Image (cartoon, rainbow, N blue to C red):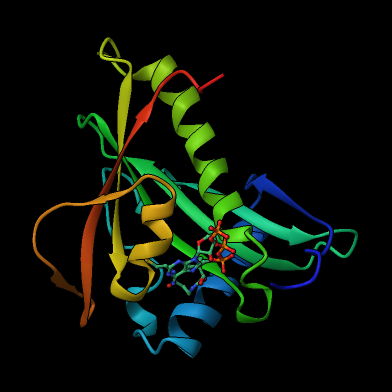
Length: 174
Ligand SMILES: CC(C)(COP(=O)(O)OP(=O)(O)OC[C@H]1O[C@@H](n2cnc3c(N)ncnc32)[C@H](O)[C@@H]1OP(=O)(O)O)[C@@H](O)C(=O)NCCC(=O)NCCS
């Protein structure tokens, strides 16, 4: 078990500088560490209906008081669809196993809950779905957070992935 986690905070990104810090973490983890191509990392050119990175909500995990960025996650909802997507979850290697990944996912879940209660046309069944495309070695991580596999593994950016879905209660359990 690691030692105590360092002091930290999670903020919803408001400035371009903070968003760039999310990109910096993603590039270090997905491109430098995991060797995914740099050109697939930033979705600036993908439109749904405006550029993906602009449409998304970005979360930044940073140390305090230094404000040094150490993790990120991104959430969004496709226009006209009734589910949300969890994407680009990354913690710098030296800060793993402190439950920071879990904290980021839970922050995203809270944001989804608020957004769904305000904006989903039909939230009458009291659940909302969150979809992620999990890399195979981290399926167990998502499973611990309530995500269940759906369908066969598939290739994404040259690497096998598994679609996983969390059916989240809209009212937090008491
Ligand atoms: C996946 C990742 C975000 C996990 O972050 P982390 O901060 O190390 O994970 P946490 O400490 O929050 O782990 C939460 C729980 O999941 C477990 N867990 C972590 N990684 C796991 C894995 N690969 N497989 C199974 N369980 C895992 C932890 O043991 C912990 O369990 P517990 O709550 O019962 O003690 C991190 O390993 C990472 O950034 N990996 C590289 C990028 C990546 O693969 N992103 C996902 C793309 S789909």
